[in-house]
Image 1 (cartoon, one colour):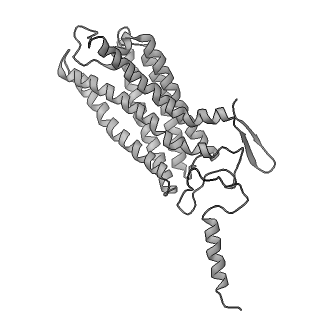
Image 2 (cartoon, one colour; image 1 turned 90 degrees about the vertical axis):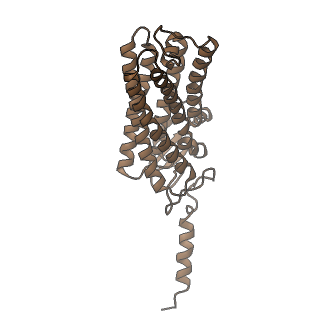
Image 3 (tube, rainbow, N blue to C red; image 1 turned 60 degrees about the vertical axis):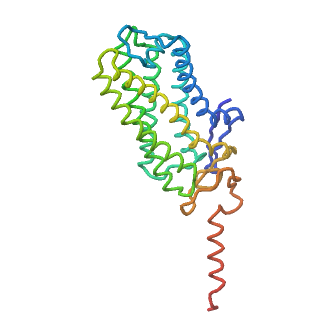
Length: 300
């Protein structure tokens, strides 16, 4: 059962989510990671079980994951499509939950812009992931590698903008260990992915048929698919707080079940969400300090 959003007279957003819907949102990244890992493990296991076959007479010792996928076309399409859908679902869910305050929200315009660009390039990436499995290397080689190139480039661009967004969020919620881990993980993925995709393109263009350079380029393709799986898993750090912000009412003005920065420190995940009946953490402490200062003033 999907969520239903309505506007009340008090300016509140009433968000109704079933338990199954919340569980699906919270665990979507693990499902996507599972599909990505299943793609790598299944194709690698098939290739090893078949005795390291060379699917083309001029192929190198290490074959491209694309060639193994082409030899097992139906499996490649199913796993690749499921992975792509989960990947885009994670990006869109992160965008939506930050907008509604279910996870730490964006405060600056460039954070919102980076988030939107991450979703846009992620969508292109997901579409190309599906298309490159349909148009395999055996029957549509030019189309396959065109979609593969767009897929990897858009994946890195999406990861870069996601990292930019994480940078701003970590600055806004400096005490949040999940946002720090999210930023570091995406930084590592982008820093490893950029040289890997450039090196793969260079080696692939310079390699002769069956050479060791072609084997190296093929190994880099396996590595890039593994980075894709880790990128999906890293989104668990972004969506995890939504498991503890599942009440039915989210208010606009910082009162309710939204997650807000308090003097540079985010609330701890797993703590009871603020329900509007008491001052948020930090503000109560500040009120005490101000009250104490007033008590110490001499009478006028």
